[in-house]
Amino acid sequence: ALSNYRFQLRRFGRVLEAHGVEPTSLTLEIADRHARQVPFDRMNAVRIPNLVRRFVLHLISIGVAIPPPVSAAQIAKDKLLDDLEGFLLGQRGLSPSSVYHVKRYAVRFLDHRFGETVPDPSAIRHQDIVAFLEHIQKGKGLSMARTPASHLRCFFQYLFARGLTVTNLSSTVPKVHRIQNNRLPRYLPPTDIEAILEWVRRESSYGVRDYAMFLLMARLGLRVPEVMAIEIDDIDWRAGELLVRGKGKRRDRLPLPEDVGAAISAYLRDARPSTVTRVLFVRSYAPYLGFKDSRIVSKILARACAALKIEMPARYLGSHVLRHSLATRMVRSGVALHEVGDVLRHKSRATTMIYAKLDIANLRSVAQPWPAGEAKQ
Picture: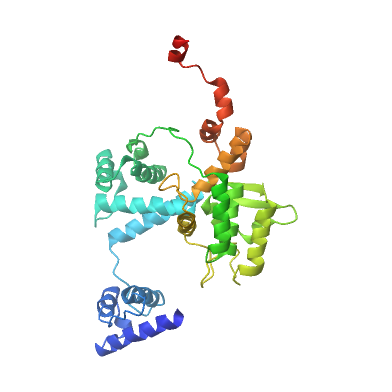
């Protein structure tokens, strides 16, 4: 890959040379214009404009190329967003992925409300929030409205905490009606879970690594970000315990099942590349670092279900089905709900109560007779 990048950049360099453009006079706009003049190579998957953009950004970072001009509005916006990130990480305890999404919607709101002018949080009104939500929700269902509303509340709570708004505008963000616990938990039967695990172990491109990741979710109910966050030092082999970094900077120690420990050991011994990072699960290509996001797990699960002709209980459920399936199996095996909540590390017992619907035996014992049935008797 590196030799291919160098080859493509040399092709770009010849175009610059033909037009008399020196590297020190490069800007992102000039580079993009000349990158599109590099002859198209259908045998090469590298997109030249994207590669050139990354290269010029590197030149800018080391002081060779010309950085793009930054307006006063952009400087003020960047300063506000940097402070927002520090606030969410340090005082709210949000995960980096949650902070990313809050910042993303904050940027979209500021751009919509202030455009190219310097943002003035004190000028924000309830009508601005409603107008923005209506703008981004055009053509989308109500279920898609909860996410931006939630992230915007975090942003407005920050503005109020910093004294940038007179009132706490988070309370003025419209709430999206949601019927709580109106359906059964979505899960797969144990036979399907075991079939998926076996497929991942045998057929996945990087089966040793992927099998260990999927076992952690299927046996311990870990969320994908929690699996991605595991570091080598989090495993206490002598005690047979695993440190789990959960939501809101929560730390829990869980017992490490024998088959999960064996899978992790096999990955460390036979498949994990040599790398300086202490993150347990790393990418299969250089640089050998942790995963950027959780999409890889959903893609592997989708391939497994397609190959095994397993129909997911919901279209957008993804890898969380493994967590639901574990809880469902525990409830139907007679495990008490509070113990299920402990395994899943729920903060609230109310969260665990959704699985009470699956305890058919106990529900039958407390079910009231149907009035019409009594009348017929």
